[in-house]
Length: 370
Image (cartoon, rainbow, N blue to C red):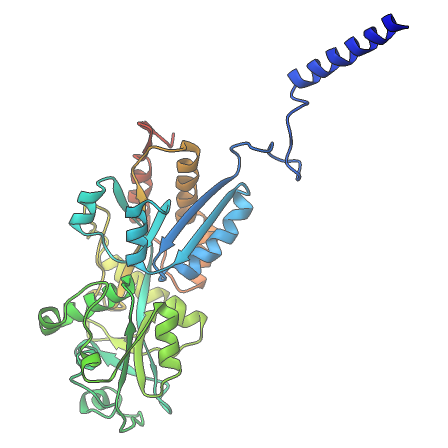
């Protein structure tokens, strides 16, 4: 009897060893997909500009169907916050409409800005009874310099002869956080006014003259500026076109550098991009404000993704990020979603520059993409 029991135990042990050697003992995920503890699931974290937040949010959802094992997270904390986050090493990529400074490149030489989309910044306003407003560069400068302080000022009235402009003080809403949207907007104001450049300046954050005379109000992010304008009669501010469109916010037309009245839309954005097609620096950055084209919307900017060109980490994670970027700038459905939200997608020549740069990314000393 004892002999038979030992034979049975030996057979069970042998069968167990065979199953284990064939992988039968490897745990599987509850969904029956990747084995538990495998490297299949990848999470990529990003933060930064609110300018591209609407389209990045949509793209992340769309990409889940393309690569179910890749989870992307993006927080809209402003371009300044995104730049700080990637310098501090707390994110895998950053979003920024504002260009990195020389001292930031010196701190981390492998940082690379990649243009992802272009978008328009628009002057939003809340003037009761006025739903068709046009402004030009000098007038917009004087409003934000607090030299024009009333809505019925002759300069505004001359541009809008049919509007019933109120005899009311102008409340100027602006970003209170470091913002690439502010950099694009102030770059335009500086492009049309040397006085603005000399006395106020261009950047992610400036000292707003309207604050000094008590007619300025700050808001965090595009939502903060939009809320300030929508809740304050006789106010004006600035947000990106995509945000204005998605939230039904009224925005003004502009007189462009060619002297034509234009509205912010796909056609006028593409015209502005075409006017600066050869303007990219070696760092793949370009300013596209005050374009000379006949139809160009004048307040434009690229929004960038900031990545590392030299990674020393999990190379599967690096490749997952590069794959996502390639998809975002080349997939027809991604492009259509961006256009629907009010963004301008990259011209072919610019897309080629980005694709070529992605081929140069290395992980642990080896190129990541084939």
